[in-house]
Length: 195
Picture (cartoon, rainbow, N blue to C red):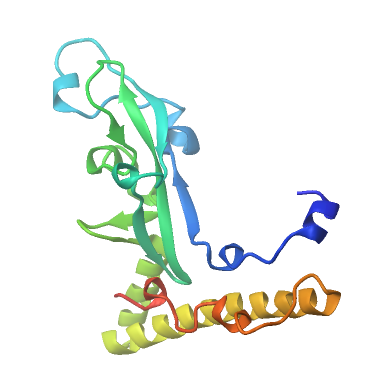
């Protein structure tokens, strides 16, 4: 955006509450794979032909079928946007966070851990494990995570309110009864600690 376009822009709440995204394309992001992966499907492991995966599209939340997974991190929720791969054997597509793909990747290179419904970043897992080793109970860890999430939410809200005041002072927006309704009054569910 150019400076002149930026100076004329209206304050958009979604610029402040937009979720953090993690793009996951191990075939192209991890140097240990050299940009190539064999198809992990059992049907592609038979015979001497090597079936390679190639990049297709992103699972990018544009519709219900392409919904993203939610990961919980130290500072709040993260939407996992994964690459979809297609096998040279022409069978169905396979998503980059599928367990069969993750099993091909060294554990030290995986930035998250997925369960059936949700997942956590390795950073959050390390935080929880270190806290337990140091004698903290789960309810204390959950409380601390809630505080970290609330702190992140509060920083976003403060940034919004500071920018709103700057726009009010510059005359770009006028104050009315809707100003306070522009930012969520309560912490969104995604920011509540879910350990």
